[in-house]
Amino acid sequence: MRDPAVTIPPGTSLAEAYRIMQHYDVRHLPVVQGDMPIGIVTDRDLRYATSVLHPTPFSEEADVSQVMARNIITTTPLDPVEEAARLMRRNKIGCLPVLEGQKLIGIITGTDLLDAIIRLTGLQRPTGRIAVQLPDTPGQLARVAAIIDAQDVNIHSVLTYPNANKQTLVIFRVDTLNTRALADTLRASGLTVQWPPSD
Image (cartoon, rainbow, N blue to C red; front, side, top):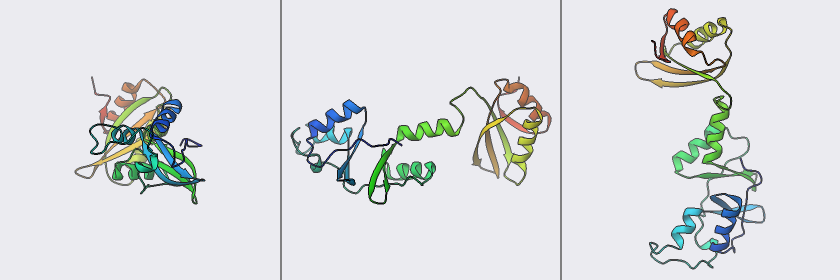
Protein backbone atom coordinates (compact mmCIF):
# COMPACT_ATOMS: atom_id res chain seq x y z
CA MET A 1 0.00 0.00 0.00
CA ARG A 2 1.23 3.48 -0.85
CA ASP A 3 0.77 5.57 2.26
CA PRO A 4 -0.10 8.37 1.98
CA ALA A 5 -1.73 8.23 -1.43
CA VAL A 6 -1.04 11.06 -3.84
CA THR A 7 -4.41 12.80 -4.22
CA ILE A 8 -5.96 15.71 -6.09
CA PRO A 9 -9.06 17.87 -5.57
CA PRO A 10 -11.91 17.70 -8.12
CA GLY A 11 -11.04 21.10 -9.62
CA THR A 12 -7.59 19.96 -10.78
CA SER A 13 -7.12 20.32 -14.53
CA LEU A 14 -6.46 17.26 -16.67
CA ALA A 15 -3.05 18.67 -17.61
CA GLU A 16 -2.09 19.25 -13.97
CA ALA A 17 -3.31 15.77 -12.97
CA TYR A 18 -1.08 14.29 -15.68
CA ARG A 19 1.90 16.36 -14.48
CA ILE A 20 1.31 15.11 -10.92
CA MET A 21 1.23 11.51 -12.14
CA GLN A 22 4.51 12.02 -13.98
CA HIS A 23 6.15 13.73 -11.01
CA TYR A 24 5.18 11.03 -8.48
CA ASP A 25 5.45 8.13 -10.97
CA VAL A 26 1.87 6.95 -10.35
CA ARG A 27 -0.93 5.92 -12.69
CA HIS A 28 -3.92 6.38 -10.36
CA LEU A 29 -5.01 9.48 -8.49
CA PRO A 30 -7.82 9.43 -5.94
CA VAL A 31 -9.91 12.58 -6.22
CA VAL A 32 -10.74 13.81 -2.73
CA GLN A 33 -12.88 16.39 -1.01
CA GLY A 34 -11.17 16.85 2.33
CA ASP A 35 -10.06 13.33 3.31
CA MET A 36 -13.00 11.63 1.58
CA PRO A 37 -12.51 10.08 -1.87
CA ILE A 38 -15.18 11.10 -4.36
CA GLY A 39 -13.63 9.55 -7.46
CA ILE A 40 -10.51 8.21 -9.10
CA VAL A 41 -8.74 9.11 -12.32
CA THR A 42 -6.11 7.07 -14.17
CA ASP A 43 -3.49 7.97 -16.74
CA ARG A 44 -5.59 6.08 -19.29
CA ASP A 45 -8.66 8.18 -18.39
CA LEU A 46 -6.63 11.34 -19.01
CA ARG A 47 -5.22 10.15 -22.33
CA TYR A 48 -8.61 9.02 -23.63
CA ALA A 49 -10.44 12.16 -22.44
CA THR A 50 -8.10 14.38 -24.46
CA SER A 51 -7.74 12.03 -27.45
CA VAL A 52 -9.20 12.56 -30.90
CA LEU A 53 -10.64 9.05 -30.44
CA HIS A 54 -13.00 10.40 -27.74
CA PRO A 55 -16.44 11.32 -29.15
CA THR A 56 -16.14 14.79 -27.59
CA PRO A 57 -12.52 15.38 -26.51
CA PHE A 58 -11.97 17.45 -23.38
CA SER A 59 -9.65 20.42 -23.14
CA GLU A 60 -6.47 19.87 -21.11
CA GLU A 61 -7.83 22.57 -18.79
CA ALA A 62 -11.07 20.67 -18.04
CA ASP A 63 -11.54 19.56 -14.41
CA VAL A 64 -10.80 15.94 -13.50
CA SER A 65 -14.28 15.78 -11.97
CA GLN A 66 -15.59 15.63 -15.56
CA VAL A 67 -13.70 12.42 -16.42
CA MET A 68 -13.13 10.64 -13.09
CA ALA A 69 -14.78 7.36 -12.16
CA ARG A 70 -17.30 8.09 -9.42
CA ASN A 71 -18.34 4.62 -8.27
CA ILE A 72 -15.07 3.66 -6.64
CA ILE A 73 -14.42 0.28 -5.08
CA THR A 74 -12.42 0.47 -1.86
CA THR A 75 -10.77 -1.72 0.74
CA THR A 76 -9.69 -1.34 4.37
CA PRO A 77 -6.26 -1.76 5.99
CA LEU A 78 -7.48 -4.97 7.68
CA ASP A 79 -8.58 -6.73 4.48
CA PRO A 80 -6.24 -9.57 3.40
CA VAL A 81 -4.11 -9.03 0.31
CA GLU A 82 -5.86 -11.91 -1.47
CA GLU A 83 -9.23 -10.17 -1.02
CA ALA A 84 -7.79 -7.00 -2.57
CA ALA A 85 -6.52 -9.07 -5.51
CA ARG A 86 -9.92 -10.77 -5.90
CA LEU A 87 -11.74 -7.40 -5.91
CA MET A 88 -9.37 -5.91 -8.46
CA ARG A 89 -9.57 -8.95 -10.74
CA ARG A 90 -13.35 -9.30 -10.52
CA ASN A 91 -13.93 -5.62 -11.22
CA LYS A 92 -11.10 -5.28 -13.77
CA ILE A 93 -9.56 -2.31 -11.99
CA GLY A 94 -5.94 -1.33 -11.40
CA CYS A 95 -6.15 0.03 -7.86
CA LEU A 96 -8.11 0.14 -4.62
CA PRO A 97 -8.25 3.20 -2.37
CA VAL A 98 -7.74 2.15 1.26
CA LEU A 99 -10.23 3.70 3.68
CA GLU A 100 -10.33 3.86 7.46
CA GLY A 101 -13.94 4.73 8.03
CA GLN A 102 -14.57 7.39 5.37
CA LYS A 103 -10.97 8.69 5.41
CA LEU A 104 -8.54 7.82 2.62
CA ILE A 105 -5.30 6.52 4.15
CA GLY A 106 -3.59 4.89 1.15
CA ILE A 107 -3.93 3.09 -2.16
CA ILE A 108 -3.17 -0.45 -3.38
CA THR A 109 -2.16 -0.97 -7.01
CA GLY A 110 -1.45 -4.00 -9.16
CA THR A 111 2.26 -3.39 -8.59
CA ASP A 112 1.68 -3.51 -4.82
CA LEU A 113 -0.02 -6.89 -5.24
CA LEU A 114 2.92 -8.22 -7.25
CA ASP A 115 5.28 -7.00 -4.51
CA ALA A 116 3.12 -8.80 -1.93
CA ILE A 117 3.25 -12.04 -3.94
CA ILE A 118 7.05 -11.80 -4.08
CA ARG A 119 7.19 -11.35 -0.29
CA LEU A 120 4.58 -14.05 0.44
CA THR A 121 6.37 -16.61 -1.71
CA GLY A 122 9.83 -15.84 -0.34
CA LEU A 123 11.21 -14.74 -3.72
CA GLN A 124 13.02 -11.71 -2.30
CA ARG A 125 15.91 -14.01 -1.32
CA PRO A 126 17.57 -16.94 -3.08
CA THR A 127 15.45 -20.07 -2.71
CA GLY A 128 14.91 -23.34 -4.50
CA ARG A 129 11.61 -24.54 -5.95
CA ILE A 130 10.12 -28.00 -5.51
CA ALA A 131 6.76 -28.94 -7.08
CA VAL A 132 5.03 -32.07 -5.75
CA GLN A 133 1.75 -33.62 -6.92
CA LEU A 134 -0.24 -34.82 -3.89
CA PRO A 135 -3.58 -36.50 -3.28
CA ASP A 136 -6.02 -33.95 -1.86
CA THR A 137 -6.36 -35.77 1.45
CA PRO A 138 -5.48 -34.91 5.07
CA GLY A 139 -1.88 -35.41 6.15
CA GLN A 140 -0.23 -35.28 2.71
CA LEU A 141 1.28 -31.83 3.17
CA ALA A 142 2.57 -32.75 6.63
CA ARG A 143 4.15 -35.90 5.17
CA VAL A 144 6.16 -33.89 2.62
CA ALA A 145 7.09 -31.25 5.19
CA ALA A 146 8.44 -33.96 7.50
CA ILE A 147 10.63 -35.40 4.73
CA ILE A 148 11.98 -31.94 3.90
CA ASP A 149 12.60 -31.26 7.59
CA ALA A 150 14.50 -34.54 7.94
CA GLN A 151 16.90 -33.23 5.25
CA ASP A 152 17.56 -30.17 7.44
CA VAL A 153 16.00 -27.89 4.82
CA ASN A 154 13.78 -24.98 5.82
CA ILE A 155 10.52 -24.27 3.98
CA HIS A 156 10.03 -20.55 3.24
CA SER A 157 6.61 -20.73 1.58
CA VAL A 158 3.98 -23.16 0.32
CA LEU A 159 1.50 -22.56 -2.51
CA THR A 160 -1.19 -25.05 -3.50
CA TYR A 161 -2.99 -25.43 -6.81
CA PRO A 162 -5.93 -27.86 -6.70
CA ASN A 163 -6.52 -29.63 -10.01
CA ALA A 164 -8.53 -32.49 -11.45
CA ASN A 165 -8.84 -35.98 -9.99
CA LYS A 166 -8.61 -34.82 -6.36
CA GLN A 167 -4.95 -33.92 -6.78
CA THR A 168 -3.12 -30.80 -5.60
CA LEU A 169 0.09 -29.37 -7.02
CA VAL A 170 2.12 -28.04 -4.10
CA ILE A 171 4.97 -25.59 -4.69
CA PHE A 172 7.55 -25.36 -1.92
CA ARG A 173 10.11 -22.56 -1.71
CA VAL A 174 13.03 -23.98 0.26
CA ASP A 175 16.31 -22.59 1.57
CA THR A 176 18.52 -24.69 -0.68
CA LEU A 177 19.41 -24.25 -4.32
CA ASN A 178 20.35 -27.95 -4.49
CA THR A 179 16.78 -29.01 -5.17
CA ARG A 180 17.69 -32.07 -7.25
CA ALA A 181 19.00 -33.95 -4.21
CA LEU A 182 15.88 -33.04 -2.25
CA ALA A 183 13.67 -34.06 -5.18
CA ASP A 184 15.44 -37.44 -5.37
CA THR A 185 14.75 -38.01 -1.65
CA LEU A 186 11.07 -37.16 -2.14
CA ARG A 187 10.82 -39.50 -5.14
CA ALA A 188 12.48 -42.27 -3.13
CA SER A 189 9.65 -41.83 -0.60
CA GLY A 190 7.10 -42.55 -3.33
CA LEU A 191 6.11 -38.95 -4.07
CA THR A 192 5.44 -37.51 -7.52
CA VAL A 193 7.84 -34.61 -8.00
CA GLN A 194 7.12 -32.43 -11.02
CA TRP A 195 9.99 -29.97 -10.48
CA PRO A 196 12.87 -30.23 -10.75
CA PRO A 197 12.63 -32.93 -13.42
CA SER A 198 14.44 -36.20 -12.84
CA ASP A 199 17.67 -36.83 -14.75
